[in-house]
Image 1 (tube, rainbow, N blue to C red):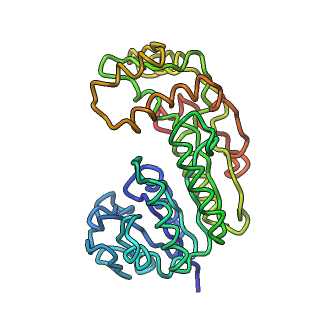
Image 2 (cartoon, rainbow, N blue to C red):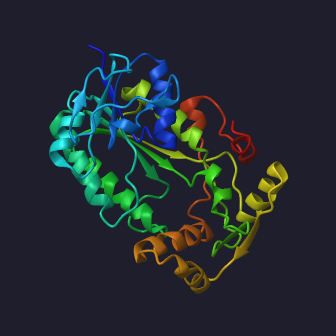
Length: 302
């Protein structure tokens, strides 16, 4: 019997790219989603549809090949998670949305995977994951990595840098990227490169058992570089304004966001300022065989 690969995040960018590539391989797949009606049909770019009851699983939903099934759950739901993961051998686990309960959600989903008989989890972590990271959300990833190491499952950690294709989108409505990053360097990685690495690992998980990959671009950029090169490639005017930490908190107060989120926003820039995101890794090329994409590549949709 062919092993079944579970893929979370298929309605998002990275998970969607992974699912699309694996569908072309004619593999046994399980798409793990919160809402089955939103599962894309990767052949037509429409929606497949299907059951929407938490924990339901349809082996052959209408409009989907017989070797692709759908599991419906949220990470925090124990029973639904177990049912959604039954029969999955290798799981691609995209980290949950940022929240104060994020680590608890990860812990429950990993426990559901253990109880369902999953043998290997490929997890999207973050550069420098651990308790001492300046970027506060990287600490969540470190906690999750610790749980996975202790679970007894095989694992592969994809420690992504910040996403290269999203950096220009950090500009506000006036085209200004602002934050306390100074001239800090970022070895940002394209989301497509993260997906390519994930696909390579999922195609041959045994070759990547208990591996930790640092996924970066092939160069570093400052926010001033991002602004200049984005303007040159797109004609869009973007500038970078360096802030103090106090100024960064003040400029974000208008959003009335929870304190943990504001801390994350500000520490995004201080982590870059402190050099924690500057190391370039060869792992994208090592795993995929191709060089990492550049900023110009992602702006051109490559």
